[in-house]
Length: 201
Length: 255
View (tube, one colour):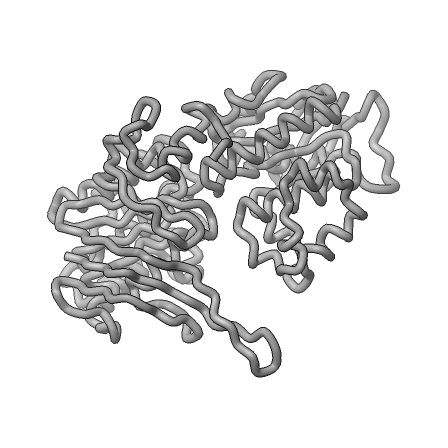
């Protein structure tokens, strides 16, 4: 169970939320929606340990998240290109996380041809699959999927979510799906949709 | 108004110190566009949508090679006539990063008017942007305001053809529909619009025809009326697969 217990999250001098609580169970997919600027991305980054929170606790199975080793909650960005070294080929980008397991490579339908290319030489959908494989290689317990299919065509979108819903079920990975698209969330969530409010004044 | 025949775009890049190879990024694009028409160009990232816009504006980088022919009102567009860009054909840019970050919006509209030789500065109030908006810097505009401002700037020279590159990306539904209505109004006044987007559903009510690009290939045209029900009226298999993959429909991946 990944749990945020009455956390306060802020950027610069402004508090985005106070006293926010959230529970995500293993193997479940939870939706997160809210208007732009409401802090969905910041909340996702806090859960993945990429942004500090100001008060409250982030707990994994009731314990604080260990500071050593790969973070058990991995964050997937909307634009994976910005999270990769542009001068590394895809093989090296993947190797940074370790050696990917063959069944995961198959689940993400990664073509061996892509390994010799640079990140900008893959299409958006292909690159997002590489980024998911890289995150899965460190064996995370939870994934934060922040608008990961928003810039993609519907076919790539359906393909990626099919693979992720299968993984959630087979590997017991919990996923927080951040999206504006109510129809998409309606298709994928198994554990409800959390709506976060408008910007506080 | 616009006629494009078998347009292709390739890029040459170095594979060694002196060896070059050419990579084709767009091929086989042909279409005609008339007054009053909204053409939606749909495709995922990397499909070549923005490349098409840049070709129509004569903004391709020097290592690009252009094949096929383009003509605007019967006049060839190769070499690119300087009198077209910004005057007869205008781009509605995707982000405020296309604007000068250090100038207030009021000043930018005046500059745009001067550069296109327009008689009057565009009236932002008709777009629901009050007089106080003119004193704001681009970074201070919200997403919806910024897109309306970019629309106003693109329209300064009263262009015939307006190319809108992802005008609704990242907008909430209310602002999105408001902007799409503005684009449709431009076509109703006798202009033409090329609406470039990856978002099929919201574009359908305003578009007359839909051109589908897949990884640089044109997969043909569909009438926007045919995107309905189980999609059996659609002519190309790719359009059919696209329609069935939408979460609003079957969410199928067997394409």
